[in-house]
Image 1 (cartoon, rainbow, N blue to C red):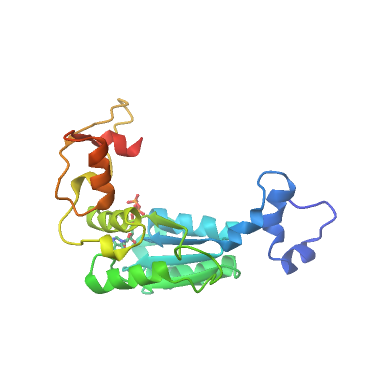
Image 2: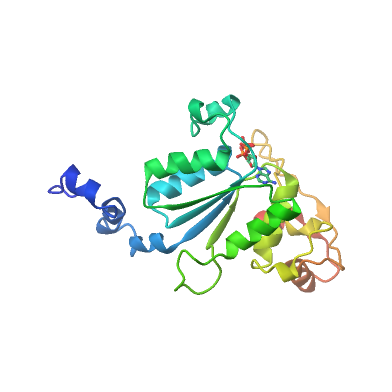
Length: 228
Ligand code: ATP
């Protein structure tokens, strides 16, 4: 990816060289704008840790990492965590590893459960924190990646994203069954994709769900629609 006349020493002293190579090759315009973006990753497990590492290597501006768990030796098959990190929180261990990979990324570690009241409050306020780029309009993060492994946590992330990170529209009690897909039972051998009908709840507290119901008055939701 490097210019022929660019020595390794020059590359090391310029943190943007790696990124700019893609722009010089004409693959992307304004690649350096990646430095302006913040991404939140919820769940630093098999999926989240790989996403965090890729974004770090790409030179993202800021990463906010959320997980309640600690690193165990059983996680070593995931490649990302190292044996000497056993016992550390996953988010702290991730920050340690990622800052070695690319020290230019602003990394924030949040060891919390997003489904508890206190964890949820910290989750919400951290998403809205604009300190990274005070000049930038809008919300504090540009993208939230849901990399959790359970329905309850996915519900919380989907509610937050659907509400535009506006906690006034959130109602944490109860579940809007139509608001999110969870892991689907796709059978690759038979190329079978199960579908099911779900009745919308007219009293749903989720604004995105109500809007959807207006577009499909009285109709049942096909779960398949939500992943297409
Ligand atoms: P796989 O596809 O193998 O299941 P995955 O990344 O989907 O991989 P895990 O490796 O289990 O699943 O990672 C999910 C991560 O999400 C775990 O580290 C777990 O601690 C974290 N997690 C789950 N629920 C919450 C929650 N409510 N708050 C914070 N972190 C959570």
